[in-house]
Length: 385
Ligand SMILES: Cc1ncc(COP(=O)(O)O)c(C=O)c1O
Image (tube, rainbow, N blue to C red; front, side, top):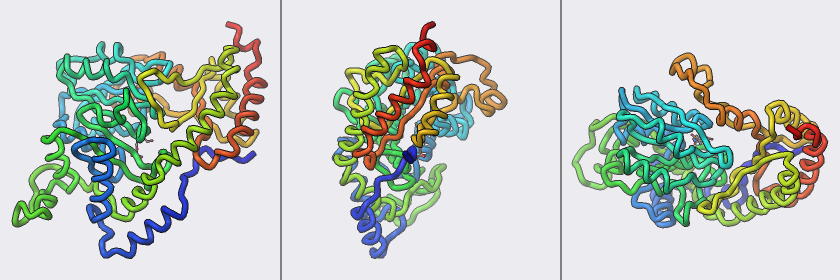
């Protein structure tokens, strides 16, 4: 077999959209296509304000700026995480505080988060890992009780839901990624979502290099100038065109991913029943987007052995985040000296299998090889403990 871990799902529709966008006179950002995609997102997600961004990383940076996070403030987030939310906090001179996750979903554990809340806590950044919703009831309650903002890092959560509500639209701010490892992609890209008028007003300025150029374009001021801090977070209309074509195909993309995910799930269930592996739990409140399929072994040694064995069979399975608290920057610069044993163990035992639409017809054979390999590597003797 020769199965890469990821492949963007790009077809004629996307090619046509980009060529058409090239033929327009406008290819800078915030042109007609960006406007159209933003309006689509606002209608689809029932959110007041959606801004297209150059990345989810930049959306998270803008979240910290618009929440006025600064020196002396703390922002709680999982350590089992991509670096972006931690960087966004550090760039504002504030301190990221890392909390434990739940081993069943790899999402933040609300009780562990509550223990980390102090008078300096300004926000909690949640990650909906693999497009499976966090326990939002618990986090909304914490937000209210301690008056801290809830930011949803829904980088992996486009077209996934919590009790019917789209991920990214539940907290004060939601951030999406359209990187080419995500379900819906423009190569690089993101979105910033909010219902809060004050946050949206500042976001419009921050995103436009700290200027009120957007108000100028609307004819609200006669010239634009530097009015706040900001950066250049607006993607080209070319990327918006690519994204528009992908969003048009979101149902097809999700359906094919679901089929691959479900095939793996059915094939691997006996291994879970036999206690050889564990896997992702989907809580009742979560309606996922089939972004990731992962399993967990009992020990890091088993994980490494299994990864190698799958690779030898031609399946590019892979690990995921290396915890931030114990990273070189976490330990040496942020001086995080604590241990987060659940995070560490989950990170060291996790394996992701390839999931993307093009695998629709190969999922069964991949699953068959994966099952055989897992049974071979994780002999019953190794799970008696
Ligand atoms: C949870 C999470 N947040 C943020 C990002 C960054 O997204 P982007 O590449 O769009 O900046 C990623 C990337 O994979 C991610 O997994």
